Image (cartoon, rainbow over all chains, first blue to last red; front, side, top):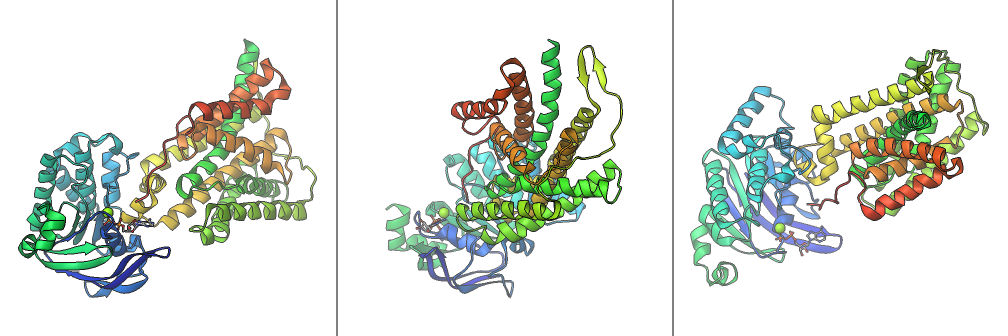
Length: 234
Length: 292
Ligand SMILES: Nc1ncnc2c1ncn2[C@@H]1O[C@H](COP(=O)(O)OP(=O)(O)O)[C@@H](O)[C@H]1O
Ligand SMILES: [Mg+2]
């Protein structure tokens, strides 16, 4: 469904991705794990079109999406929940959600999606007139995920959804991620919390200073000594 | 007390015009984080367009105002395309220089076409003033206040109750997050310049009519005051620009009446400095957002 080939991304002259390749198949949850500064967010931004590639290619459903602007990539069915959630703190919950469906024109589908989001996250419905900035961290993450779902994405890119959340909330978020995937959305999950990520993902890649240093099924990675030492803390 | 109310009316009149102009500064800043230093000169060109429509094309005041707003809006889009878009990712200093270039160009263009003299603005607006006790509200004041408030109400509706308006506020909050929603930020920027420039044309024409004077450097003083108002209200904030404009107009006029007319401009800038010392983000400003 998604394939990166030898992707190189620079910030100015500083390389952040030094030629990474990986793929995500339809229906999967694939995780990209790695320490802070490894290049995980850069990878997602390159896919969603926020960053330009210096070299390499990204293909999605058989067509190239490298070089397409971010606002065009969303239209192809790729939605990103950015690191730090990326909600519009100055807009109400309702306005945030409506922007999630910005690319959609069919009113009935939008209303159906909104109903589904409110069913999944009743807290958001209660707070629909509140501005995003007044929500708790967990609610903001739910808003960010709900907003992405408003576009009915085929591929969902999640950038550290566990960041800054209490363990109980993290568990809830991961349960939701699994449910979203069961409903047919493919997921590329970026995490520092490798343990959580490998518990929901089928496969994973390990990123270190802009390069992929290992890959495998989640259980393989969980058993990998290097991964254990560096990312699972034992 | 009558003097107080008279100056309040006068202050609200000029203040509403400051507010209209300040909106252009604040909306552009909100999204691009640059000060459009050519904004006052766009206002000036818009005023001349209005003048030409009235004197040469014999349009009535309201149609002339609307057509001038439309033409100036298109000019605003072009200015952004030509002068700002190519340097958008460059250092902010480059954009500033580009803005100064546009400013110099527009003033010289006006001087070439219309000369350096001051033109009267024969708007043919007649009517009786409203007299409340000792307070006089002139017909031109009613027009200035009425048109400004109407335009601001329209902008408020647009920004809060249309999808494009919500997208505009989202883009002003964070450009990258907005792009992830599928918002074409280039289009939003064009619309922002169009609205800001159209409002500036309206304000310029109302100022031209109010003072019966149109001249090529009229944008400097109007622009400076409006910029002050925008910073006062919190640059980037739309309600802030409205509040800042009205507040500046009122305080300036009351100050001139009770202290000395000579201090009028000094009051504006003293106020600005005081507010910025107490609240650097302005009255309704918010702290800068982090980028993705
Ligand atoms: N906007 C930027 N400008 C310059 N360097 C950046 C920028 N964003 C990230 N980097 C650098 O690129 C590298 C990868 O960053 P990032 O993709 O954010 O890592 P991760 O998400 O894995 O923590 C880091 O060394 C980081 O310092
Ligand atoms: Mg990151």
